[in-house]
Length: 145
Image 1 (cartoon, rainbow, N blue to C red):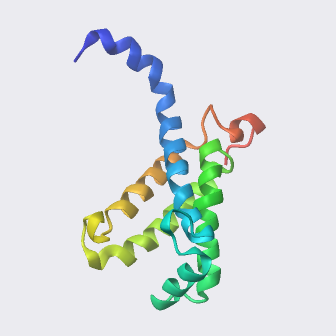
Image 2: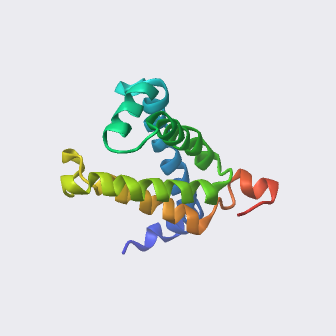
């Protein structure tokens, strides 16, 4: 629509997948820190484990640890593009489960609905499809899964 911006869009286009991958990764990290360390108002491993057991995920400690590590370490791995596709696939599975947990609350995230797990699952799907890309450790080490 604005021809003068055509060159700008063409220049920035290769960064689009990087922006999606890095943002997806970085925004998962604080959620993992909540679960692992109790940071950002989180409940830590013990509190998260108790909540998970209360909704039927036992052993809660194991699930809390796995989810926390996926969000924290996996988020960092997505950010730098290391084992990008396997991590993105794990995030998709986790978000699919999160959707089922949040489904009874309706759509809107401000009511603990399923909106955000769907959104983050789709962002992870985008990363899975694209892979780490040009600006990733996967590409640097020559291993694109």
